[in-house]
Length: 291
Image (tube, rainbow, N blue to C red; front, side, top):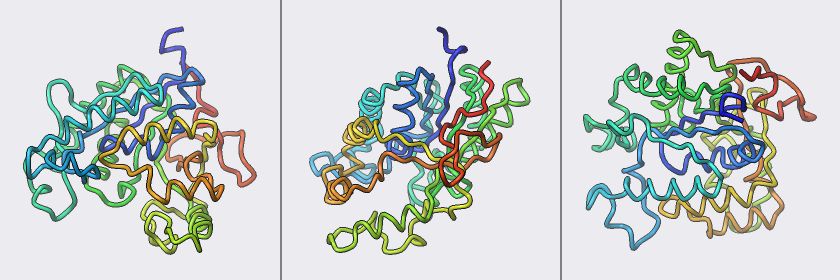
C-alpha cells in the first residue's frame, strides 16, 4: 500500500522533544494503525536548557553544540515511536535557529526563527505539504501554548502554509491545536496533593499555560497502550526531560493517566464520532475522506 492510500498526519513543532511531550502517544498509535506520520521540527533547539551536567559545554554561550546533539535525540525518540518521516524545516538548504525566550539577547539575533519572514518559512512547509498531502495537521494555538516565540512562529507558519497549500490544490481536511482541559489539570493537582511533589510546578489550573476551558477542547486521543513508547521517547531527550524525576514516578503510582491522554482543539474541519461521554472526538481522522 503506498502512502497516498493511507491516513496521513502532519505535525509541526518548534523544537525536538515538543513532539513527544504533546503527541507521543498519538504518533505511536497512528503508526501502529498503518497511518503515515510526518514530523516537521522548525528549529534544532540550540537555546534549550541542558539537564545533563556533563553536556553543559554544548550550551549556546559555550560551544554552541546543543542543536546537533538534539538532532540525535530526536532521531532516537522517533525510533522509539516508530516514526521514520521526520524533517527539519528548510533542510537541507537551510536551518532555522532556536529563538530563545522573548526579551533575551538570543531572541534579537537576525538568524533566529522568530525573525524569519512567515511567508518564506511557510513556503518551505508548503513544499512538504504538497509532497506528503496530509489529511490532518497538528500544531500549536496562536499563543504557542505558553508564549515561546518559536511556538508562536510555528503556529503562524503552519497555518499560513495550510492556506498556501489550499491555493496550490491540497486542502488539509482537519487542523488541530494542542491543548489540555483545565479540568484535567485540576485532576492532576488534586492527585498530587499530599505527596510533596507539585503538578508541573503549578498549584491551580489557571497557572498552567497550556490549559484551556473545557468547552474549547474538542478531541481526546486515548493512547494508554502506547504510554511505554511515549516514555521511552521522552527518555531519548535527556538534555530536556528528566524522566526519572519524582513527578514522573508519582504520576504513575497515583494512577493518573497524564501521559496517555492527549487533547486537541479542532479549528478546521468537522467534529465527527465516535465520541466519549463528554462529546469529544476520539479519532483525529474521523470524518476524513482518504484520497
